[in-house]
Length: 258
Ligand SMILES: Nc1ncnc2c1ncn2[C@@H]1O[C@H](COP(=O)(O)OP(=O)(O)O)[C@@H](O)[C@H]1O
Ligand SMILES: [Mg+2]
Image 1 (spheres, rainbow, N blue to C red):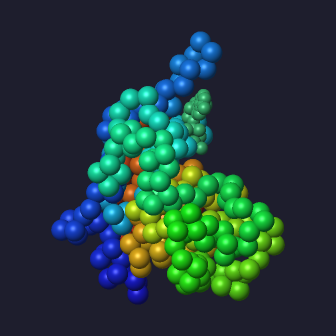
Image 2: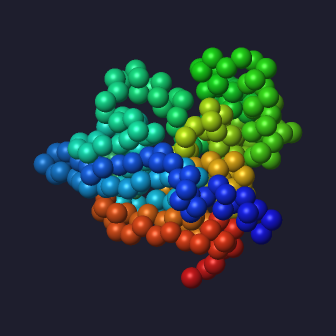
């Protein structure tokens, strides 16, 4: 309730300042598996405005990972387009796409994917290092982000000294380090117990409300789905439904067993 005013300011519901960060047009991705042709993503067209907090849901095999990989430029569509901030990813050369990704998209993976020989802080600073951000600014930003995910006192620890929930919080901080247009998270709570999953969602929701960070996360975890403001459901690679919820009831919703 204390964040309601800020939350509506950051949310796209006001229409007036809606900014399109992501758009897909008739997106298709097929895989040839021997004689079998798999339509992992079929004719997916949707848009994401700055400040949205969206869950991509669907059962295992429905195309969530394939779709997120296309949205993040980690994979190329068989047909159709992905536009990020107006740039068509397929129009970029491979090297340009790497650079575009580095500056515009944050990734959080199911398996954390932290660099084991680096501390939490060094992991958070890594993208900024690649971007050529100077040391004092890197330190300032990593301190701010580690504090935002509740890990100030763990900053100098390596991933093996952190719990799974803490590692995923480092991954969220790392994803945000480059101030990306949006963060893609593929089943970020899949390896977490329910307390850690809930803490991670609290942090993501707070970053969304306070800083207007745009999140797009896949999940088949009902507790995570309950926290989204928009739920896009995939069935066999197609969008089956796309529902928006009242920002006052989503995002802060408690677990609600069906
Ligand atoms: N590299 C690949 N080669 C062949 N088939 C794939 C590949 N990646 C995904 N698929 C198939 O595409 C479908 C969607 O998979 P995926 O995107 O991983 O779904 P989800 O993340 O929802 O579980 C599945 O049938 C899967 O087997
Ligand atoms: Mg998947």
